[in-house]
Structure formats: C-alpha cells, structure tokens
Length: 120
Ligand code: FES
Image 1 (cartoon, rainbow, N blue to C red):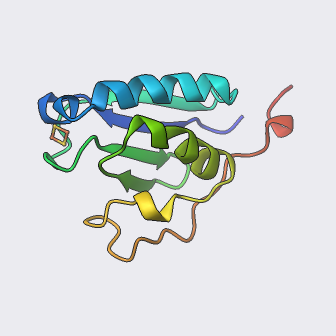
Image 2 (image 1 turned 90 degrees about the vertical axis):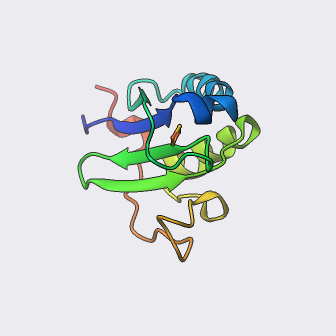
C-alpha cells in the first residue's frame, strides 16, 4: 500500500482564533465520511510561519514530496477540498495559497489510487 497522504493543520494561536479547530474537526469528519482514514494522515502542527493567513493547511504527498498549501480555509470548504484534491487528484485552484502558489496552479499532483487497488 502507498504511503498515506499527510495533511498538516496549523493549530497554533492565530489559526485557532480564525477557526483552525473547526477546520480540523471538519477535516477529520470528512476523511472518515469519504472512507480515506487508512490513506490520509492528519497532523496538528504549531505555527507554519504564515500567521494571519489561516486557518492554514498543507497537503503533502510523501512519495513525491509535493506540498500544496491552502490558506483561509473555512470548514464548509473542507468537503470540496477532500473530494477534489484527495479523491479526484486535482488541487483546488481557487483555494491555493497565493504566496506559495503564485499562479494558483499545481499541475502534477499524483492522485490517490482508487480504493479497489489498495484493499487486499
Ligand atoms: S498560527 Fe497558523 S501559521 Fe502561524
């Protein structure tokens, strides 16, 4: 089975003030809802050095070391992020953090393999 995708969710003071705890809760619930718990690992982090732009999430594909940054994430955006990025393999252009992705593009994300390839 491939390495799990990691999602780093900032839970430091500024991001939490801006709703980072609600984003984390929505993310945990959506990962379970979409049946991705075995393949997506959520990590709570300290400050990611981008205070004031949060809640901040980084999605990391360990096999390729690709990092996709999302800023100002709202809980209601989480299902779309999970559906489009983690399931369909298309980072959500409108949500990308412009400071890290100036063209709001991330062309070469490797999608998760379909579930039927990983179930023994
Ligand atoms: S508190 Fe989240 S980036 Fe600094």
